[in-house]
Length: 419
Image (cartoon, rainbow, N blue to C red; front, side, top):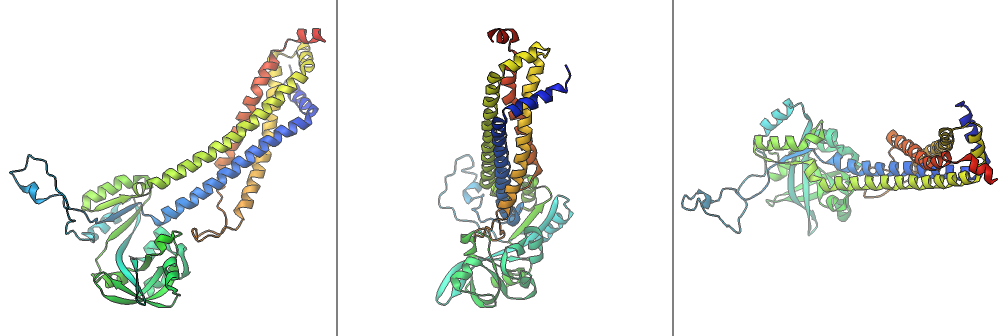
């Protein structure tokens, strides 16, 4: 049998039930449109939320934690060496907050090919003085250039210029929420009191907004020198070193290595943000589940339409088989019909999905919680379109295979004799 006759016959049968064919194609189009749009939007949102965390979170943080001494006096006693020790009300040891051997750590980071970059930080607990009222705060002393290169610091400075911290002494960038509580403006001077009771006057050169009001209420930024001066510490006083790697997945391994080598505490990004990563995975899973469900539903529509077509075209099928078409040829005809519906509806769905994603991408979205975006986030990853095309073809093929199999088994003698 000539292969060229199969698409001609399939086209004739499609046009004979044009309305039902259009309904089936529209079902596939709607499913693909929503599948592409939903995945693009959800992954865009996940990417935005992930970047908010990843942009501001080091892959590894080296610091010196306050914790009780592991070696208590009773452990040194030979008399009780074989006994269990139950000790209550243990106070933290007298370990310092700053990192030891900062110079050695920096040299090791410079020579390590796995390290993309690092940024030193000094954390200082202070009080913001507002007349007779004191607000608890934290000043993060940073190297502005390193912070910008690794953590996109300037993107979160919603007013003022970040580099002013580096160029102008005794300056501060306040958290947006704290500034609103103090009714402070750029250019104003504020008083801060250190833990030792010393007061310092700092000039406000900008406002910082992370998107988390509780953080912005207490957190502010100053240069390393200014923060060390507030604490009364020398220039080599560093409480944290924030590290970014070329490969983030190596953070737990490298963190343990540096913790053992420099006898400090290390926190990797996977441990710090395990809950957040779980939330992203669940949202992605829901998106794929909803999209695939839509495609399966459209597949049932195609299945029903082809089933009805077989019952209505029994005479046509019988004539085809009586004139020399085999059961395989009949099966190919109905599978061609199903795949044609899938291709037409799928192609239209990809176009409408892209256009709908474009529309969403241009809808204004302004919120204090997400200061770095102006419109709804969309991810135009080509993988979503490839997955949608693959699923539409697989779904429509399966939807057409079962009716086609039934049509291929029709006995033309019984049908013609019945007539």
